Image 1 (spheres, helix red, strand yellow):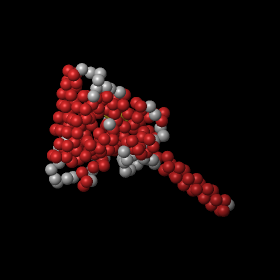
Image 2: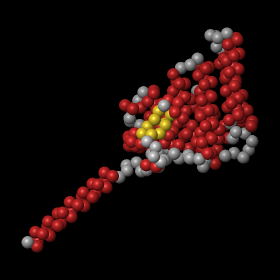
Image 3: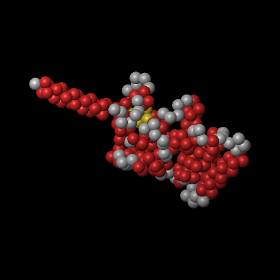
Length: 242
């Protein structure tokens, strides 16, 4: 009888331990992301891209991380181009619009690594510079869907450039960058002049008007490039995309 009681207790103990292990597996967070990492406070949703009214709830953000673990901010980030072509959620992101959404979502999660006013200013400036460049080449090409999609994807590209420059001494130069900056801007203006000058579909009057318009964008880029980080990021962005 004692042996029977002992066996019953042993079986119950094993069953309880197995149940406890299963419970731990179910409640574990597969991504390591905490509630307040995704959404501080009691907010129910977050704006991913305000210009396109793209919002996600807490539950949707967690599903995104589950389906796209590369976006977990505890990992080392690669460029949005690399991550996009590695991801397998083609039902969600397979279209051109889907790729836009992926880049905006990528920017949201990577932005969690860059709190503070310094990175906020960098973000605003880079997005403005990149969109100025995108606008210039859009106008020179006479439009096209590529430039419309780039407008959104720039969010991801700018955020990655902030990330790769963070704590990287390569982007900190003590010398005067004015000559390098002048050469870059002069080259950009020359591209504008050459492209407009060779366009046979617009009148001379339209050429002058377009050149004046695009030179204003160059002027804004000039005002925003205040250090080597902006200069190098701008050159790399332009030569990689246009």
